[in-house]
View (cartoon, helix red, strand yellow):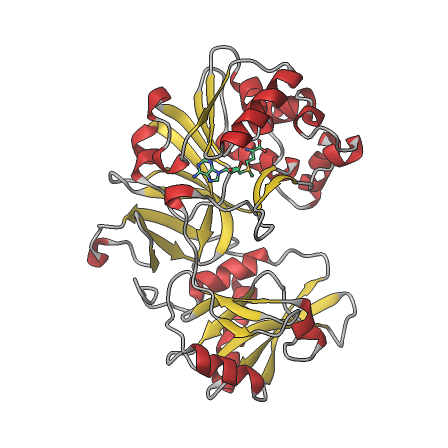
Length: 415
Ligand SMILES: C[S@@+](CC[C@H](N)C(=O)[O-])C[C@H]1O[C@@H](n2cnc3c(N)ncnc32)[C@H](O)[C@@H]1O
């Protein structure tokens, strides 16, 4: 598994695994944390193993995370022997890796909101022969003050915001690694304290997916449904603005669409998550379109990523455009991007999306990632650094992705 991870990271141009991370992954027996699973599956680098689901919705509530994302997060955490570490969201495996890396002088505290998860982790850690992991049932929104301060806080559930307790409990010079929602997309942010109290600077942004944070930090985006037929459902996911007129959007989806094609394409095996984040940083009226497969089969939608496709809602909330793609007519190994618009401003919306995709294509070599800052939510807008501002409960997230096209300073709708 570790050999495969190392090879894949090299192929994708990712940072090499730190020797300490590699050693921990080679040492801790993952099979003890996923009992009953065939060994090949336990050591599949991309397989997260769901250990608990909500009985009513079947939504995953807990899992043992996939080795590939665990490796990335441990690399970002840059753990040293002797450190005190708080893991928010338990399962045992990651805590055992951290324990291995920080050694006997260090101290890892692993908390989970769910007593069943903690009981399970306790048994697995015993089975793996790992001692000195401090497990506790607690809501991560409040951190775990009893063992603070921590040199590292590693969050392993999808958070929407950074509560002040994490700042309070992080030691000077500490680092916070947290999967966070960025305008509806989930990205793992590596954060260090910024220039003023309560300010954070993001050092790295990585692609990831995590079960949702529950408890007092839980947050749900607005999710208007645009088409309800079973197997063909289409909806939008909106973290911040824009305001939407759901009835008009529903009607617009039934009307004839306009599709325009961008002068931008990628190889079939090229990841495009950078494009999603770029569009999220640049776009006014940003939303994610979610769909069931049947909506494409029936011709209601052109091809999209079902779990979330970049979309733009127009200013009056009555129409929208979403990104689509097709195999290039000129080169079968490449995919071309386009945009499909619906509603009274269909052409204008589709053109706006195409323009952004072309800007991404021009910018992506020179500026491969955004700048993300967090400031306290109480910071007056005039004191917030320039950029696209998304206001959350505790913080304002400020997004900047340098573009060759000059961008005006702008606040996201609703902020
Ligand atoms: C992906 S799992 C953790 C995986 C684990 N770190 C491992 O070693 O593979 C996410 C966990 O976060 C927990 N969780 C969700 N909300 C939480 C919260 N507010 N506080 C603490 N834990 C939470 C869930 O119960 C779940 O067990």
